Length: 118
Image 1 (cartoon, rainbow, N blue to C red):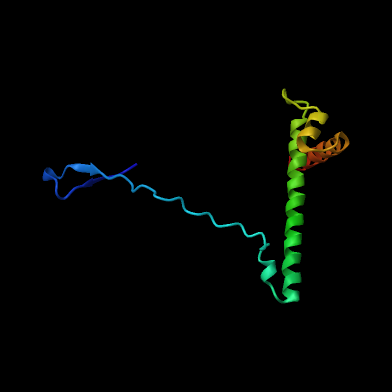
Image 2: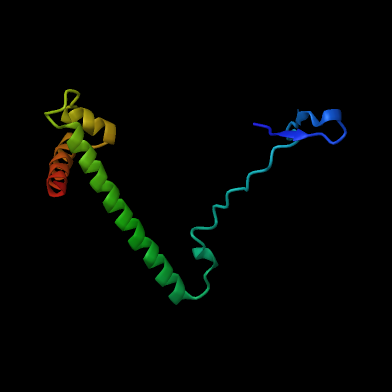
């Protein structure tokens, strides 16, 4: 919201609102550069490249494992028989793009994880 400013040329110093300047052009978004993947392509030393790419691989694996645990917890919560809006295994499988067998395994895994939390 614009702030009132006292105009020096107005008698009595009555506040006047200043409007923001109009945007005359849309700033260009930086073009995505598909060639750069965490700057690995800029590394010249193969030892450094191996070290950095290994770090990234391990970090992505850890993130994927953690995300899978959250999927299992969510599936277990959605399948909880105590919930009035519980979902059947086939619906959970469809939402997560799993097979029904895999959904049942994930629900059980999620229940184990929830049991460890309590």
